[in-house]
Length: 140
Image (cartoon, one colour):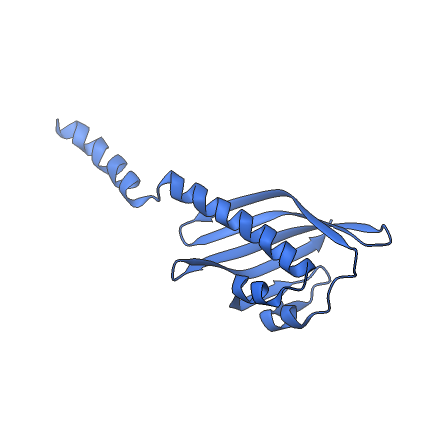
């Protein structure tokens, strides 16, 4: 009996201290929705939504290698009218109160020129709310 307990206790402890699978899936869905909301807010210059999504500590590295803060993002000029963006191949990884989303942002300018950017976005859950704390983009 002691042998069974020797193996059972660590196994039970692992389940007791790991987040429930449904919580992780729900968090993944929340992060995916935040990515889409962020994209729409950026395209439509919805600064209220951007303020709500981006943490005050937010830092971004642009494809050109420039660093931007939340304030820089909020004061940036809008995208050209008629341009579009779509997210593809988005993967979300949640680890407790931290999450990472990676994927591709497909941009199409009104003149038909297009570009694909790889992105990595960092999320942190503070006071029960997910916030975007960092982002890095590079041209593919």
